[in-house]
Image 1 (cartoon, rainbow over the protein chains, first blue to last red):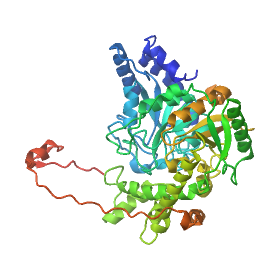
Image 2 (cartoon, each protein chain N blue to C red; image 1 turned 60 degrees about the vertical axis):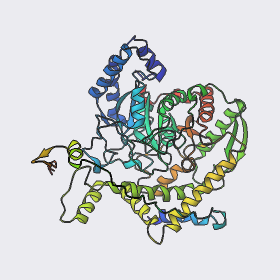
Image 3 (cartoon, rainbow over the protein chains, first blue to last red; image 1 turned 90 degrees about the vertical axis):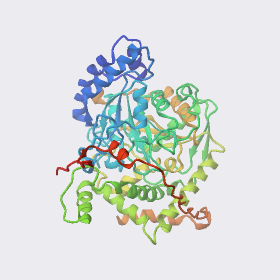
Image 4 (cartoon, one colour; image 1 turned 30 degrees about the vertical axis):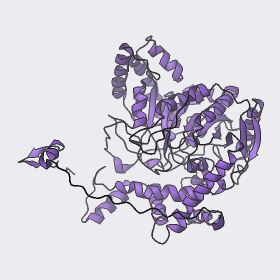
Length: 484
Length: 63
């Protein structure tokens, strides 16, 4: 039994051949069985899902046409879902129930989707392997001894294992695209401002975007089309029309001007990744795309720029977690001691490390040299992209420099972990739309991904190019052992 | 941390002349205070979790 795509999943329910409740009852035993090995979920609540399914059935009976009727969607556990707890994979939030829906969740539910549960992540979305979860690591469905990537590793693994046909992640520096590549599924980061961040626990507010995972580009576009659009509760959302992202998936790649990132082959790139990328470019050429080389000269500085800006914002955003409003309280004699006790016990090592880096980057006497300089360099990087997009429609590069690595292999070397985001942070810093689409497998049978990046608000163009590549290659159709 | 700090130092390799000029953040504008009429007690009680002897009852914290 494998979870079908969204179109298959909804058509039976929309045309009342099967109720949403029957669908949920049939799907849950297999979701639970597969999760015993993959451990994608922090919270699975069948009764909660059945209650949503009954509501969907009532709406269909009343004549509503719901584009996502009965589609089971998993949500990363850093976004608010009414009726479910939220931990951000951190001890500091244990016992917290948000009691409301994030805008992205509310829009999916409004379209008939059913939230199956909350997925594992690196604590507060800080990491690239999901090993920084305070609870347990999620395993890659293609090789259970390897990481699924991160920070949205649970959401990527849940789709790869075909537990659910789609899921949501959040992408700050690559946290949707990198795990999508490592798990062999599609992962999409919209243009910054396309999808509301209301109800998403803030990590780095100028970078965070909610994005979908799915088994196909068209399914990712379906979720994006429902979630995108302006929201009065998030002033950074934009009123630029969303267009027709699902329709864009059938456009093809003929005449598409594709720029191959000249700075793509940096030190540390796995030779198999490089070879796979060359083959992917040849596929695009065969489809009629016009291939050229394009330079984004400051992209090699993206990692240091990102880790100054993201950590500076995180040090400010995470100041609210002081034990007063959220989570369990630990006794202390003084107020300072109280804060220290909560944050020392509540935050994991990586979160503490990033708060320290960010606080230093913002501290008096250093803010201009680090945060100020990184902000100016970020503007320069965005200008580099703008210049590059004068001559191409999309820029392509690998999504990750390496396939999925073994659990524990990089956990003692945070810099090596940061470098896993080398291809994804540039688009994040410039606020650009970017997608990872399966591009093949390594000799060890591990999935690899191709990243396509577009200009701001050219989300449709990114979907068009990725869907054309997917139709030609069909790498995303392969099933990992746990889903066969 | 030392390795991370050394890597972050790479942003200094970008020459100052290439960077856009420093933009001074505008000062936070202060709004004038405007007194408004309000029935304080009614508003407070309407938004409270409960009352005890005409005072807002603060929920007990159980550790």
